[in-house]
Image (tube, rainbow, N blue to C red; front, top):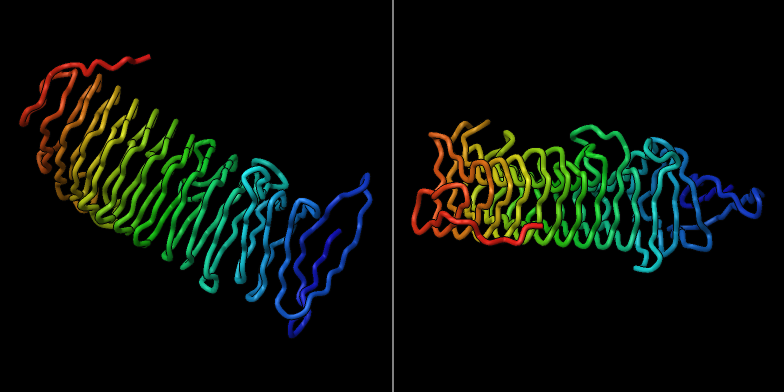
Length: 359
């Protein structure tokens, strides 16, 4: 059993739980540290268990390094006022796992006192992160969610600060959301893979961001949401088997999304490929839409009840039930595009199949 006593102006106890070694022999370790505490969990002293709500105090550091493992009890939360670093290596991941898979732990709350949250080469199962006013960088992190999350519970939620996520793998059971990003300028989600994660990437009140080179599969809701965003690039993504919208570009009562560039994406078997709504506007260029119920939608749905305006250029619509739909309040201009369903109204459009080798 490991208990860590951190000495500062007074004794503070951080309970890191039980560890079974040498055929169930329990070893008691009391470590006295003075001034600022720096505690490292690595392969040689793992696993550790956090069984009660815990706080990393300001000035203290918890580092989970290569091969380090932490198991967290049911619904247990960790408040981070000091420094949390999760940094494995590509051949030996750092990991945070639930004591009870499927029930899982609560969340790491990283607060305003913290300069940065960096997670690299890690495995995170059945828990969440909430980061506020922090510089966030995730690289090569595998997230697995089997928890029965509510629709508005995100695996990772970021409020203000900075954000770059790349090379991550996120898989779930179509519960909760993926990466939910609030009020960040230039957020980046790149080269990530998502499966069965509804609202896998959602930006709210974010400008100058990018969602690029990602893959999205088997969502029971939208894959990408942009709410009240400006000058956002959504490019080079593959989106397949989405029960609602591959991309929903609108407000959700936060305000319209404008100057959105949807570029070089492939959308397959979605209820709607790309949906612009609630006074939103943008450009859809060099995309491929295959076997969707509707390819592109431009509507006034929701609040504000204002028509949307979309330009579609040089896109391929193959075997979509409805390639383009716009309501009477909205506009959708199509040019230099092809459709296998019927000739689209607009400049230099073609009525022909693109000659795909579909398997």
